Image 1 (cartoon, one colour):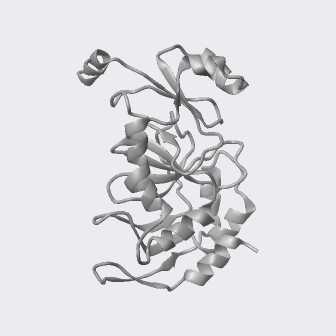
Image 2 (cartoon, rainbow, N blue to C red):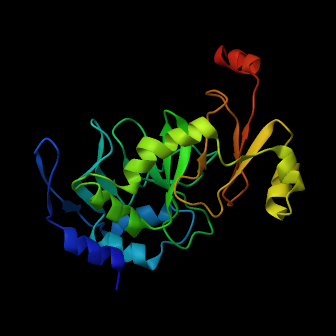
Length: 250
């Protein structure tokens, strides 16, 4: 039994009423045909998991959810089969966009050649310029979208968009220094740090919890970002205020 398909069957046709008393009906987007499915599979860095193949033959997404994020923005549509890809390859080389928030920010699935499932899901934000871990379950993401479409319009998705992204920007809580990584007993962290110098700080998101992440643009729009292969260990280059001013005029 495909748990996502079963949940979509339960919620298909549900009627939601937002705070402005506007009515929305949740509908499923059409399934992929054989040609579309082949094109999507060809765009992946990994094999298409069988549960995703079954899901995409049932529906390619959902529309009309109305997951409230703020007074102005909401997630109205979720798409499971992004063929074009997300971009931002330094951080997410093979990401697939899942949903957007209405002001240029996205939820993406971070896929690698080692992926066995369509997960994990991150929130990629440009204002503030951070990424935030959301969940390791597509079903959980869909459930939270639906939860945020009903009174009191609260969800973990709204928490990430409203609060947790700003917390990461303010506090930079997951960052580790170059020296900390060199002294760490973790082989992958140490090896990554040895390939860079002390101007870089490091973020280990291999076993994240909701709200973990890092400020990819903390040191200006031209902040350097690197990733340790398929592993979810990231680094961004610290810059002095003077260097950031020079970058701004380039």
